[in-house]
Length: 291
Image 1 (cartoon, rainbow, N blue to C red):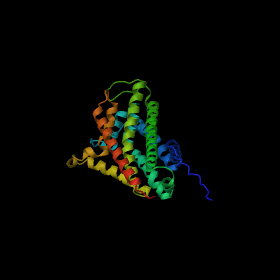
Image 2: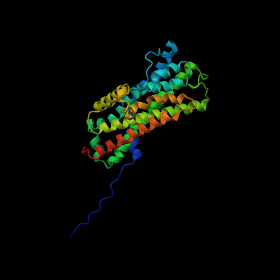
Image 3: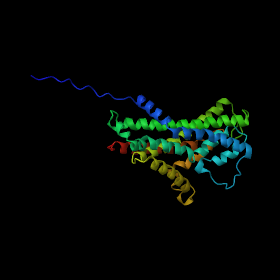
Image 4: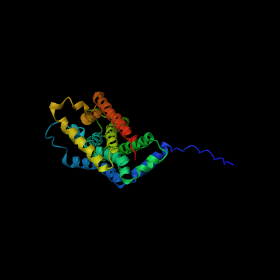
């Protein structure tokens, strides 16, 4: 007499929305995430108070500010202008602090979990490698967007408090209403976020190749410093179009009226290429990872 066995039920998959909620709770509960976000929020306040006291940078050197998104040039225009201050803060943050946020998020996403042994649970769970990478990518994207938005909002509030609502005008000399100010700030936030998504994608690609998150952070920040140095060498001008930070200085174009789109579009396309290449390398490595 044979006993019939019940057929095995279908494997229950976990939805991306549920995984993303869990990932975001984990990200925003990390003390270092809170500390870095707080630092970014305070940075425009410090810049605004410093400009109000000192009156702006001296402008010595006169060179291109490509390493920090034209931040020093924008600082000179931020004195008494509530619109320029948040964008100047973003330009300075693009030099180091915002890439640090993207690098930290990318490092914790894969390498951090691998170092703590929690990545194996993801790999043996009913979650495909592509879905895992999608959740980690969305987590990095969200924390980066939050960081950029927080810095911009803090800069807007600081600029209005220090300079008043009437000190809102573009570098072309035209004044803006509330809608125009919101539009330019939103454009700046989206453009800077896209640049940092490119940095985060590179961090994710490196993160899939190591179990040491600090190595990811050091590699990304070191790469940004090397890129900034390469931009200063005229003999390597053929290499400049391939450097992610080549268009960082185009952020200042947002403050012109009308906005010249060529530099912003070129920077967006370049960041998009880094995003696609970085995620492709991360996926290629992740599907061969044995845990």
